[in-house]
Length: 131
Image (cartoon, rainbow, N blue to C red):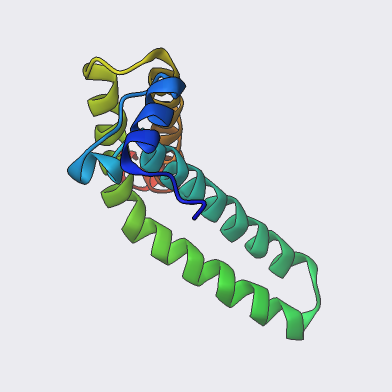
């Protein structure tokens, strides 16, 4: 009996000041771009951290950390060029629409993080193909 009825739910969404979203806009929005970019950046950090730990520890543990770091690195090398532009597009979509300022701030942060998630690939592959 605690579930709000439809008019009450609509009134609560109007009190928050943010208009409700319909259809795919509920899923594909700036929050998805923000969390996706954060997950990609954390994946890069954990992958490189496991490679650094693999260099620092003795032989048996080195293989465990090394394989996890290599598989993380390979997976992110394939996933980041696809997902980072998608997240940047979702953030730009929120910026170009008439969204409230709180959603615009989230979209700007998501756009910056999506651009930053490309940096590890450019740093790693850039010198190989530039020189």
